[in-house]
Amino acid sequence: MIPVGAMNMSKITVFKVGLYDAINDARKISRRMATREGAEMMGGWVIEESAVEIESSQLEAGEQWTPRDFNPRVSQGFQAQVKA
Image 1 (cartoon, helix red, strand yellow):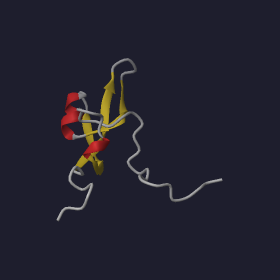
Image 2 (tube, rainbow, N blue to C red):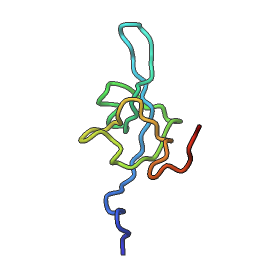
Image 3 (cartoon, one colour):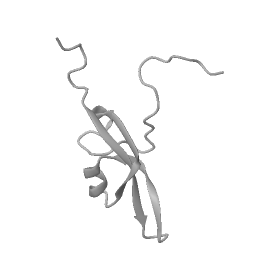
Image 4 (cartoon, rainbow, N blue to C red):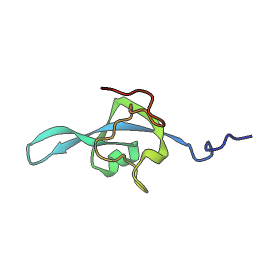
């Protein structure tokens, strides 16, 4: 038997994406993380050592990348601690 909520929880690997900034003639790192396919679509390259496994639902709807300023280490679910 499959646990409730586990049916749509597919995992996917995303990476930080290196991009070329033509305006400043420099390399930069995208504010989004992306799959290999997404990085290619963005015209960039994956930074291999940044690989993180996330739920596919964390990608932007219908896309191969996360929202801007995505933090894969933010805990999800109920708040476990209050910081003063």
